[in-house]
Amino acid sequence: MKADSNLVDVLVVGGGVAGVCAAIQAGKAGARTMLVEKSSRLGGTLTNGGIAKPGLFHAWGRQVIDGIGWSLVAKTLDEGGGRMPDFANLSLPHWAHQPDISGPLFAALCDEAVVAAGVDLRLHTMVAGMQRARGAWRVGLCGKEGLGEIRASIVVDCTGDANVAALAGAKLRTPAVCQPATLSFRLGGYDLADLDEAALNAAYREAVKSGVLQAEDACWHIENPTVAGLLRQRGSNANHIVADASARTSVGRTKLEVAGRASVRRLVRWLRTQPGLGNAQVECVCPEIGVRETATVVGLETITGEDYVSGRIWPEAVCHAFYPVDIHGLDTATWKQTFLAPGSVPTVPRGALVAMGRPGLLMAGRILSSDRAANSALRVQATCMATGQAAGALAALAVKRGLDPAVVPMRDLRALLRRHGAIVPTR
Ligand SMILES: Cc1cc2nc3c(=O)[nH]c(=O)nc-3n(C[C@H](O)[C@H](O)[C@H](O)COP(=O)(O)OP(=O)(O)OC[C@H]3O[C@@H](n4cnc5c(N)ncnc54)[C@H](O)[C@@H]3O)c2cc1C
Picture 1: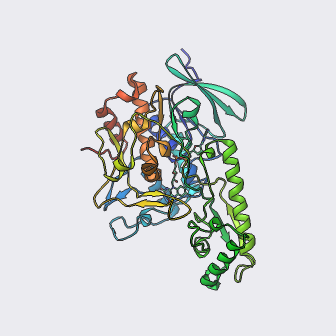
Picture 2: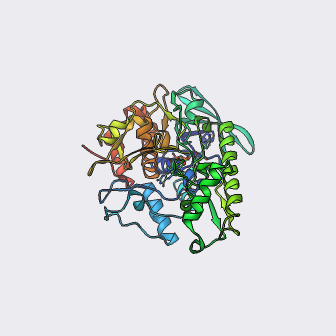
Picture 3: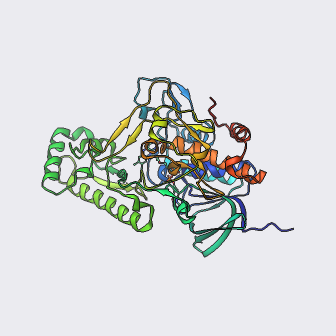
């Protein structure tokens, strides 16, 4: 009998770090898997947003996240010639434990790994609709060739914006205030040694006061606007662009992208009038603005800030997570950072990856079920990779056994994850 080419076991939507790991894991576990991604390359925020500093895989001197994501990161570093951070040095700040990797190389290695896992990869494709019928999802896809439909037993939403969950009618959490976004770019044409940082910071404050610039054009803190940090970072991850939950829609995201590019242009026009910066120029702007927060999906379990900070080991933990609670704001009143107590390593339960009231719908990455405080830590790339791999394994097992993902035996899930290199917490 001919296989139905419109039927897959697992459909992963969104090819960011979570979706890539979910699809590779599901494919490697033998599920017929399709990965749908709206842009031209895999990696999401890591590649198109230019945030190629994945963390945190290590906590308190030991590795707590391993598996598919870590092997892609290690391979990127190896092939790209980068240096592994000194994870044993606990006196370093947490961000110094995040390796600097090449985004484009990471994307190419993701292509290779996804294809090698037997996954049907569809770039330049978006999901247009979700309908539940006869125990499966009928998923409308919009590609360059027009509208099409695929049927999937399990759909894993890895869009970063809960787009699929919204189309499926799942309950979302959309914060009234979202963390600001950041548009990364690369600034060249100047020598740091020629710059008088104090004078530039003073001139920047004047430009903000007079309304030529907005305080957040070059820095994260509007109470003490400075430009020297952005110049040292050459434009990478240095501005704040005011965002809200509408950034999960095309209309809202368009406004945000336009605001981000206007901010960069405004800033560079001004920089070129300053001493030592007459030849400053934008060498490239990331194709997409980096969005920290839009929505999360309400799951069978929700990780709260208290769960996270207390290092809760959930009975059905599928992976660890490690990062400070880090809610970006524009000023000290809205910015919140809480560091974990020494030795504490929080975990993620299976239930945070299973959508409530929507059978056959899973989610991974930064939209997993969590409150704002917990999400501000869980959203980092290592955790997105680990939750992606866990969701991919859960989806594949559920299809294979004909079970709801919520009741797949944890013993089997843990065994499958460990077989593919993941570290699974136990009490
Ligand atoms: C400015 C900034 C700085 C950060 N700094 C760090 C850091 O230093 N280290 C760190 O580890 N983390 C950092 N983070 C957090 C981290 O980068 C992200 O939270 C994480 O990469 C999210 O991964 P994801 O796979 O869940 O989603 P995303 O990276 O958002 O990927 C989602 C993918 O889905 C695709 N997609 C979206 N909608 C659709 C649709 N409807 N149909 C089809 N495809 C769709 C997108 O194109 C994208 O490829 C930062 C985030 C930002 C914004």
